[in-house]
Image (cartoon, rainbow, N blue to C red):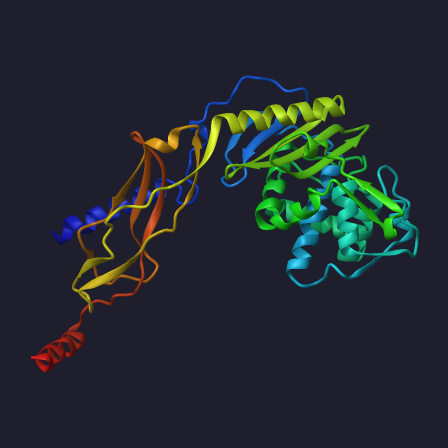
Length: 387
């Protein structure tokens, strides 16, 4: 019996390795649609799991214009979270920041604005001068900040991306991909959801009402659930957007690069988001019913070990699929000591029909050492004392 239990546990552990433990949906189980959108490159992903729902030339390296500012904003939010800067800090404007062309809020050399005001200028009006001023404030210089941008991109697995500046103006070699933009956008929205407090502002003012801000993302007024993230337009990049939206708990990110016009950019984003919301839904993995709280342990200092089950897990499902989900608990009848706290002893598996959608580990909540001679004497003494 002990050999059988050990063999069963080994099989369970191997199965857990073969099925990715967190957000384990197989992105290949959703067939890619065949429709086209008016742009050079595009991708649609589920924000929570990263599952790709649509792609078109998603790895083509292209200029991305002001979508670059998503990385500038990401590093800024990380600096805020680390306590290196605060929203009330005054950000000075250098001659270099002042010299930026394209969209701007007409900053003057020597002028100062709070970091929060600069964030509004970047998120709402896509101000190049504000983006560079913030880059210099966070990094010490734009050159150093761009090095930080590229380092962070590498950490996020953005293998097709090279940044040359902090604002997205056309520059030789300043390139990214739709897939990389989606990864960058996902990190921003997942790790720093408060950014949507700025990206959803439609109109605002700076300088005591003298400077008007109007959001460049017109989907805020046209699309239900939109909450960001960034538009971009240059002669080299064409017209671009990374659009994020949430409905009924499902959050999607649509990236569109190289559209011929602003209207086609927004049309492409709407087509992608509509497809996602029409065909998919956010689900929650059901938890096992009547699951044991403890398992017997052979030859252990304690006779049982407490189990730790996963919390309810997020799933990406085809529309209507949630009604047919089942959960299977896979545990051995007993464990063999020693058992280490935090070690995997079984799995919770979620199925749609006979297809395994995901597995999550069941862990030992405590350590149970092997019962040796000394511990046997202690146990015997306790038993005798209780008589």
